[in-house]
Length: 81
Image 1 (cartoon, rainbow, N blue to C red):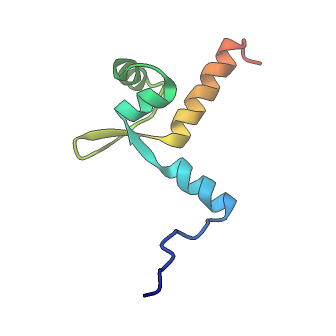
Image 2 (tube, rainbow, N blue to C red; image 1 turned 180 degrees about the horizontal axis):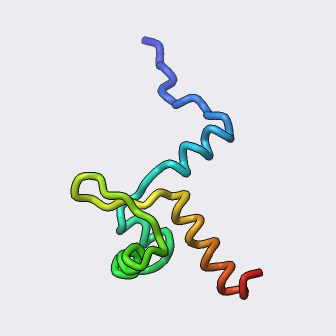
């Protein structure tokens, strides 16, 4: 019996980045990525500092939004430079 290769084909780097940035994680995973509590993530969403979307009953944050949020924090910590 022949063994089939079940690996997914490699995506182009540009397509791969687009796919990863469009992924959305729940608030627990978003908190883990940022290194804060879920309560902090909720507070930042309520303040308008972090955009989230609700799918059914679950709130999700796009990975690209988390990256942008961290860049904004980094920029403000450096005095806007």
